[in-house]
Length: 385
Image 1 (cartoon, rainbow, N blue to C red):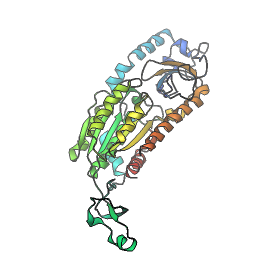
Image 2 (image 1 turned 120 degrees about the vertical axis):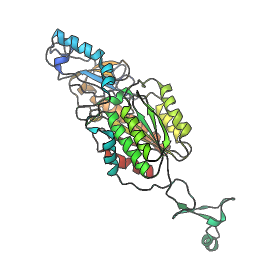
Image 3 (image 1 turned 45 degrees about the vertical axis):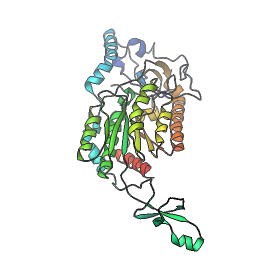
């Protein structure tokens, strides 16, 4: 069985490991006399975690479980297996685990979420009093508070809150690192992100809001314009079911800009933009590009989806790790680098949180083993606050 975890890599982003059992590990990697060793227990390009380190997704190909010798035939089979990994992953599709079937699970999650109106960010005539503001020339005199004028001699305009439709734009990260599923996860990160996205879409559509779907990376992806009605949910689920994890974004800022371009072009004033991603293998500058979408009264919410093992880094002993995106290979010791990895992950999360707060947005952190109903509720609360 293979599983993947994420220590920090050269540029400091978390890594997505996958560990093979001793039976399929080459002798050089699994022998007691020649274990995976680390020249120095550090992270980064010099394998040393520093202030600028950020986690990157790596695959574990050797670990403490690999402690018996392997035959030459098994070693050759392991090498052939590694070469054909990407081909087999595409052929088998996304690992849904117990998170499928998506259509049924999304309806169940949405049914567990309270569906209600949300407040419009716009002020004006409506059904519930929302406060006062100073009069400015050109304001409709029908909303002038005459009582305040007579009592205090001040020109004040009464404002009201209304329930209104608010377009939802979902941006789902389908890059290669999102295809990872650890031992304790019910499914791949992309499967969990797709479930949350589909449930959010169903809740929004039930409230009369149009929903659009965009992508970061991915194969067989289909972007969808903002639409409402009964058929919109079926189209969104179909697109989420057919996408495959793929693409290397960790150095390709241009690809990220191309992905955000239609969002910036089509998201109307007051739209809610929800990004579902592990935030680990995105290139430098991605956060600024996403934050730039907050203009024109748009609300940004980023939902970080990690595998449980990426959040806790449960490995111990010598490890050999390879990047899920890119060709980086790192040999290290899990116990020596655990603290540095967790610090790098915390820095990345804090960076996103503070930047989004500065533009009025929110960051939510989750794992693929969390309750999707609760995460959808938290996302809706962030949108409505």
